[in-house]
Structure formats: C-alpha cells, structure tokens
Image (cartoon, rainbow, N blue to C red; front, side, top):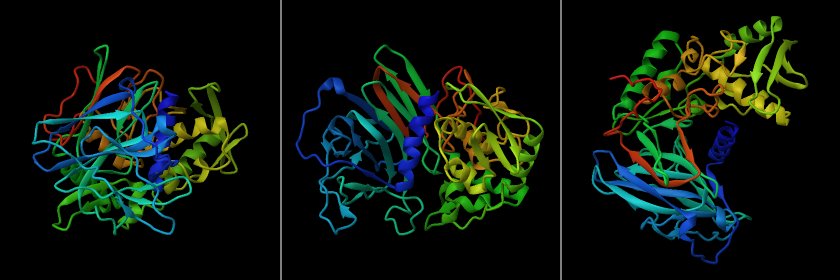
Length: 423
C-alpha cells in the first residue's frame, strides 16, 4: 500500500514544477534488452492524426533527462542549453506518430522514472528546454498557462515508472480530464491487469455533471470547464487548479472542517497509518488536531484540494507523513463525520456521500468505467484489502504495457469493482 503513496508523491511534486531536471551525461550507451520494456501505444480515437511523446529520467544514466525519439526506439538525451537562454526547442523530433484508428505502435523504453506518456490529437505538442546547473530542465505542456502553445490543443498523459523491481503505471486526473485513456499491463507469466479509464463521451458527461452540482450547491464547479476557441469543451480542471479559470472555492470546506474539529473534541479520530505506527488517535483541543506530538491546524479549502499545503505540509515527521495521506483523503472524500476511522473500513461505498466533498473527484470516479483513477493526490489511499481506487497497474515481471487513447472499445475486466459511467 505505502509504495503507492510514495509513487504518487513523486509525480505530484514534479507536476507543480512543470519540468524535469537531470544531471548531464553526454556519452551514449547501449541499453541491454533485459533492461527494456515494450509500450503499446494504441489509437482508439476517431482521428488519423495522433501523436505520443515519452518523457522521463533515465535511471541507468544517473537520472538523466530522456525523451524517446520519433522512431519510438531511440532514447534522446538533450544537451543542456547555454546559460542565459530560456525555453529552447528540442533538437530532435520526439513526436511518435500513431497509426489509423484501431492500430498500435510499439515503443521500447529503458528503465525510466517519473515517466509521462503523452498523447495529442490533431497536432503535435511543444516541449522545450531550460538550462540548469544540474542539466537540461524540460518545460512541459501546461493546462494552466494561458501563453502555453498547447493550451488550446487536445492532450493528456499517463504516468509510469519502470525500474529493476517493477513497472508501475496509472492514469492521472489529478490536474485535469481531457482525453479518455486506459492502461493494461501484461506480464511475462501471462497475467493481465487492466484499468478501464473513461468512455468516449466522458468529457461531455463530466461537464454536464459539474453544471448539475453547481445548481445543487451554488459552488463554481462549472467554472472548472475549459473550452477551446470554438466554444467546445476542451478539458475539466481539478479544483486545485481553480485559480486558472477564476473559480473561487476559497471557503468551500470551512463549515465542514469546523464540524469535523468539533466532533473530534469529544471523541478520538483513529487513523490507520498502515505502517509501523499502526492505528494512531487524534483529538482536538484549541482548534488543533493532535496526534501525540504531530499536529494539524484547521486546513483551508486549498490545503484540502492540494493535499500538500498548510497542516499537510508543515512540521513533517515520519509518522505525520503517514497520517497526512489518510487524513487529506478523508477530507476530500467527505467521510470524517460518518466514520471515526480513516481509511474508512467500509470502503468506497461511503465516499462522496457528504454534501461537502471533492465533487470533481466524485464525478471523475463516476465516469471511470471501473471506478478507478487518480482524481486527487492521495487517491491511492484505501483500507487494507480494499479495492483499488487510483487505477494503478504494477508487477515485477512486465512484458507489455498497453496505453490506449480515445475511449473507443473501452471495456471493464470481468469481476472488476467499479461504478458504471453515465450514458
């Protein structure tokens, strides 16, 4: 369980910086076949113009910045731009063209950390470089920078790490929802793990549900919908990115937080750290939740959406780092007034029942065909033995990782736990 949270943290903090950095090593090496893995890039859109991009840190080269070239076979290690320059273009084509709808292209990747597999429809994405003392820093497409060259394009990404121990991959909705994607991991001993992702109509369904939620509670959920220059829905942003559209959720959780802190003045909150500390108890006094030395002042709405600011980011100890994911997940899922144990042992059936919760996350899970996908930074938290919520696949014997973009032919594995999407 804990390795999921640590993996997620890696991606979350890198997203905030919007760049990858690496030490600069220019000597080319040949990667042995035993240290590579195939990625099947499948076009399940209706477009004949779809590109993939693979970025990350080359583990076997000291975490050097790496992109896969357009042939999907050759790693490209960009040089550090000269000091004093900014946003320099790549010197090599790294746009991997996919075939017509229903076809696949296979990429071969070396061991890689912090990897994103990007897809864009109808146009290529723009990746650029900044110089740094530690090697080139990759400037990635941004969903919140209005001057970004890809701000009006259709694009999205999946995340993965492939190292000597395992392949770990997931679909991420932590920042936004745009293109439907699924991930399937096939192992060398024949096992298959599949995360369904969303169907082709998911974005429109999300927009409808966000508008409906706004009518219910008067909060600016529809303000998270971003449209393209034609007025068509382009993506739905996470409320953690609400500032980009001007949607103001500043006091949204205040009343709920007050109720939670009042409730746990009279009784303890039990947090299962799922680690060496086992269950720890917290009680509130003087508006501070205290876990025998680890304290949590009342979080703001932005603290809850981000999961890493305010009391979720200060005075960190090893034990507090185990409490934070479980406490922030309970706030986002709205379970703290109905259960004094977190993770809630009753499981996903109790999530998002409170009128005050992260409704973006609720709607994301409703639109995921099997109910699984990272909708906020600690969406990997679940009770011991409980069903996965974050939509991760992982195994120590990976053979092929299939990432399909577009949602056509999306399916749910037999016996999978999940919530069907709206029609």
